[in-house]
Length: 334
Image (cartoon, rainbow, N blue to C red):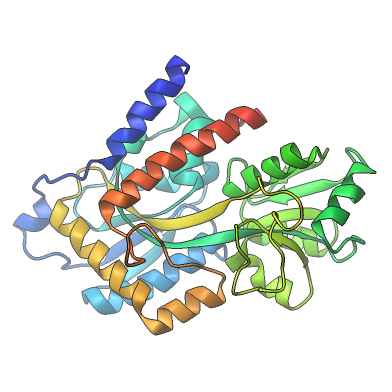
């Protein structure tokens, strides 16, 4: 194990601790007593934004204060995440965290990361979602084996799109390339919206996206689903096979979306948000909306909900897992 890897693991382990420090928010009265911002570190209309708006709507009703979504895209999710990491730990600035901004980026950006795992406190997970591998309808392939054969017959001639360098979508594409031995050119975009439009137009032949933000295009035929990257088929698109069914069982990746706050966020506020999130996840209407988007209930605790400590351990494990993928694929950012 390299010195860098040992250091990274040590840093990641500190994310498991949940702070219990006092806060001006507690001294000034019951929390919350004003508007809360939920920072989404990506552009509108993507999965992170969709999930955040569902959560913000329900938190507003349950907390009795407005929870507004604030999109702060840039640097693969680092810009918005850093805003929250450096915010006052008073419970009024929260982060809609993702697999990329809170796991993959630590290895991808290394010393250039503006924040570290210990700068953010785990609160809870909202959903886990499959990634979908799909193609432009102009491409004459309908299954994963057909796609592999088609690309291998045209090495270096086709593109694979993602919503940005270092995202779980990019990493899923890298896993696909490594495991199947494909020569595809990665084309990153600033968000899912532009990438989807280019694939619909046929200028990007292959792409990967989180199921919630692409599912509408797959259902109406503007894009063709090839596989989902989970161990079992998605209830939202049960007709689409898994990568394992297509002969590539190692190409498995589940995106996740949750909430973190500044590292010194007091435990009473963490517990309150976590409790409300657990209740929201179990609401039939919210569960229906998440299922329709392709989301799956978190499974970090026996009852299917989530809590700060298991979420913190999960994040630490994801930092290690995706760090290995980054090193194996030799991915770097300019």
